[in-house]
Image (cartoon, rainbow, N blue to C red):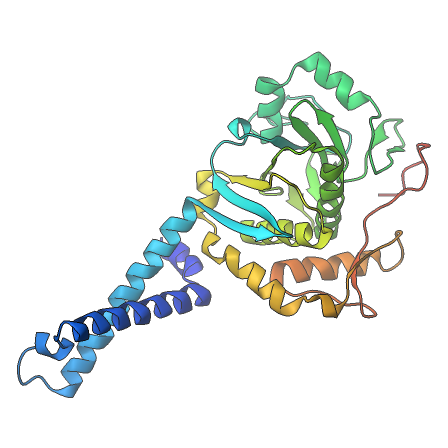
Length: 340
């Protein structure tokens, strides 16, 4: 309990609560002055300056604590903000009943075997396959080479491996190639690949969303393993929003990120609107632009630096440009996969 309170009580929340406390005390003093009453009149006669100061400090702290609790409680029910001129809603609820095209993460092979080995029955992926998909139709969808901005490749075992960020359209769902699958059937990802996947995903969604709201889970918050340690849910959300902003994509009906109640309780959602303010202050158009280009030796460095920019609210600049390096293949022929 104390650990959770310490995590939630960030410096930004303290500053925001202090401002609210000062504003409320100022408003009370103004109203009392208008009606001809002073705060001093409410104190015992003959009370000294130290007592008055003590009362003011206690009142300030109590109001600040109340403001912090209200701010935190309100944020748990959802947050609204605007990015690239479109509405972004972070809500708590059930992704499957939310209106819009729903993003469902898969591995890079689009496996659909729910056996608690390849896919867990309790994962979002497993729930979708078992409860909301028609097996035969889904099988045809994942086996078909549909339209995409990204090119798949042939793995050593002959299976088709899709670049992370590839999307297959299945009715009201967008099936996303989100993770690698290792020899032990564990979903894994590097932080730089997470960034690249998101950038590719926004492009793919722009291709197929057809004017519908875009609905996503908090990607990476499930059983996905990250090389080098799993980021916090706050960092994952910050990176999703940062890459959306960097992509310059505009979804007419907005984007909805759906959280579970347990996930929302662990997060600092009251800080989300502060991301935008930080980005606007630190990443202006005068600083450059998000460059797109083919994969190069800078790819690893650029994507790792951009991850840092997303999670810290700043941006990485290389040669005067904010670099963005998604994987781009140049032909429709299925090439051999590069070494993993």
